[in-house]
Image 1 (cartoon, rainbow, N blue to C red):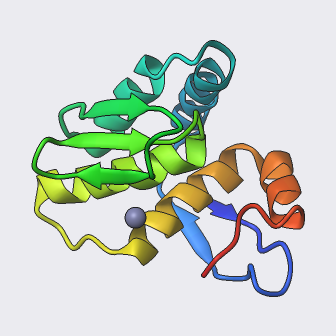
Image 2: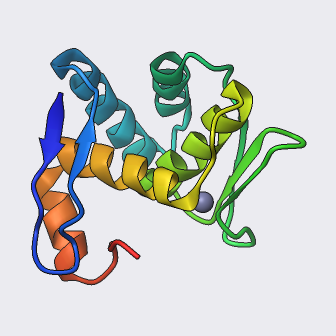
Length: 134
Ligand SMILES: [Zn+2]
């Protein structure tokens, strides 16, 4: 169980996530493939295994607003943002598993996994005001 450390006032929601060191290593490599090669497959496969759900469709393009369409099981994101993909994937997983599907849950999962995996990048994004709790 890894824990994200609160950064500063306004960002201090406690966050915990059940993820092993091996999973973190795989996730880190998958996130880098998404950033560097615009390759979504490693992260899509990682998350399918993590949640034990089928891989959803995914479209990336600046014409999209970040969202998940449950009728077509498609994730739309406007750019290759790992946090956005994690957020929408959480919605997909909860939909497929028939579990409660909230914005707070999606934010908690996406931001916490990102913070635990890339603490320095997370801190930079928070300090730049690009990532925050609502
Ligand atoms: Zn959402």
